[in-house]
Each structure stands twice: as C-alpha cells, then as structure tokens.
Length: 211
Image 1 (cartoon, rainbow, N blue to C red):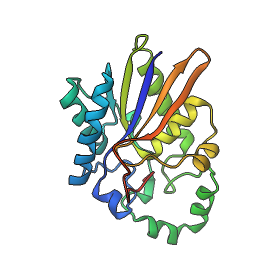
Image 2 (image 1 turned 180 degrees about the vertical axis):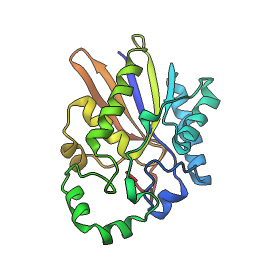
Image 3 (image 1 turned 120 degrees about the horizontal axis):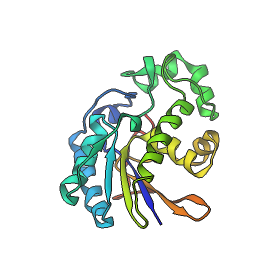
Image 4 (image 1 turned 120 degrees about the vertical axis):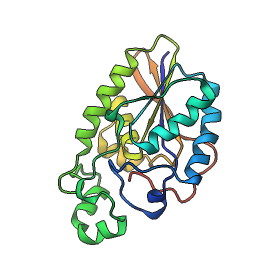
C-alpha cells in the first residue's frame, strides 16, 4: 500500500507571535529548525521515496532537514502552499479578531469564509492541494512512501478532502497539526484512510496552528 506523510513546517517567529502568514515567505526560527531536525531523524527511518514541499521557505526549510538525512532531493511545488489569507497577511490574530469579529465567528462555526477579503477559501486551497496530491500519488510504486512538507491549514484541508470529510467536519473535529508534526494517509482497496494524526517528537507547546 502506498503512503503519504503530510508534514507541517517547524515554528517561525510569526507562529510564536500569533501572526497570519499565508503566502508570506517566512523562515524557520531557531526553535523551528530544531523541531524540523528532530522530526526528520524519525521520518528518515520510514525510507521515503519522494520528498515534495511547498515552495515557501518555512516548509521548504523543514523538508530540507529531511533531505540532509535521507539523501532525497526536495521537490518544491507552489500548490502545497498555505491558504492565501489576503489582507490578513502579516496581521496578528488578535487584531484580525478585533476588526473582523463576524468573519472569525463564522470560521469558528466551521464555515468556509474567504480569508482576508481577497484571499482564498478552503475550497480553493483543496482544489490545488488535491491536484498536487493526485500527481504525487501517480508517481508512487506499490509500497512506497512520500513525504509532503506543507502548512497548518493546508494539511488539514488536504487530509479532509482525501478521506472524504467535509471541511466543517475536519475543522470541528481535528485539532490543527502542531509545528513539525505530521499526518499519515495510507491507501486501502476502498480508498485512502487517515492512519495517524499529529505524530511528532513530543508536544509542540505554544505552537500556533493554521496561520
């Protein structure tokens, strides 16, 4: 059976400060780099056949930690990027809540509201991420594993789409992946199933999800 490990990037300074990143090309903090290296040591034991990543520095840098210990090359693809948060990019979460309380209430209810006025909806994100997933899976041989370096909301949205959960179900039932933690999708004869969620090297205390 083929397997895809969906791996969220390590912590950034923006994560720690509660700042929406979206397509902001932020880099790993010192803590995030350490998280990535610790996770990479475990993931290398899975002997992945492919290593792909969002082209944003925080995800690509996380994937590079695995490349260094696995011998694989990181293949970047912008379709694995985080959701575009539009005008929220660079804003603190608390400020967004203060300015757009109605939008935040809708998000808390699991509604797929467009982020930051002119950003993406989760449906937009799922279309591009699922296309990237399908292209990746088509290259895997039986029994092979691929690792995808991506982002908080992107990971949850993709997993939901692959296993047939509505976005609302996933939002209300799955906590976001912690920094440098991962989910595992495994192929069965009836389709893809979620086998592991939020695996990693200990708890990522204080990490900010889905931003």
